Image (cartoon, rainbow, N blue to C red):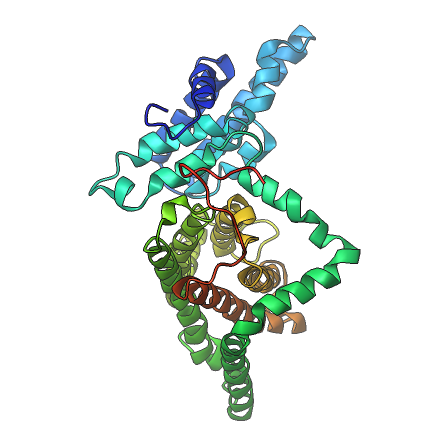
Amino acid sequence: MEEGHLDPEEGEKAMRSLEAPETLAVLGHLGAHIAISVPLRFPFGSIARFGWVVFFRLRSEVRALVRREADEQLRGARKIHTLWVALLSPVPGLGTFAYIVAEPLRKNRPLLAVMLDEALRKLPFGLYRRQHLAVLTCWLACSGPGVAVRMVQSRWHSFRPHHLAEWVRDAIENLRPHRNLVRGVLAVNVLAMSIAAIVGGLTGMLDEAFGEYGPMQTLKAAQLLLAGVAGYYIYTRFWRLPQAGQRVDAPGSFFWIISGAGLVWLGIDDYFGIHEVVGDALEGGLGTTVPLLNNFDDLILLGYGIIGLTVVAIFLGELMRSRATFPLLMTGIGFLIISQIVDFFVPEGRAISGVENPTNIIGAGFILAAYLVKLREVWNELPAADEPKVAGGLRSEP
């Protein structure tokens, strides 16, 4: 606020909100979750965080039931210890900050931005300045509806049935300059799977072709790693453009490096089966299974999915700016979701379980194509859409 990144009125509102009882309460519970997560690792930290949320919610409900009246304390507890907080609290890593989705913090974007900004300023090696993180926190603190919400609302008509065909034609037109690149990536996937299926079927080594350390798993992991590296170069190349910090699409650049880092980890995890090793160890140590899921490691993959979809939701409005990369990215995510649904809920040996690996590989291919198309756009300084410049690092109202 003192540096002029935040509107004075919004800054004062954020500071006043710190004194509100509900805000102080939720910050206290957030601190408690952080304190729990430091000494207690999964699954004990997850159990403790979930128990914390349920205990305080039930305590308020029981007190109100005994008194036969809904007092201010109960209304506050219902805003703080919500169902979403309870569901997020057991998720490894992400559950530590589950109280951020509680209403007193969720609806106070400036306060969240100020908290994040203060935390990021403490990063070593001047990363706050070198990585232009003030642009990100400034964007999060924008007054009025969130940027993503405005972008989705302004383009929501594209998803109505009578406009869907026009939207698809427009996406295809924007993809036309990149069609050879996309075709090449998908062709490699289809050709590799066809060869693996034919050779594996003839030699009786189909499971080896699609199994651990096999050629198909190597292809899938390589695509995720390449997409992650492309995300890094998208970010770095964007910030070399003239007046990058003044562009309206500057906040969206952070999606590519954040998601890119996640894809690199997923590629490593997928190839070496880290989540499977951890899942087997937990299942053996606890002597139990996860209800509705096939294996304990599915819970870890579910956590990955929640984190990934949360990042996409935060930057959804920014992603929709690029009509070339957005449909590719959404298609890839759709294939990965189908693959994980089959993995989670279909017992091994069923015929339908055979679609898990192909959809997983094709999904990784679409995601790689999306990142390569975006890298090509940025590298050649081809804007995804005609967007106005902004003053002071903040977007102007459309």
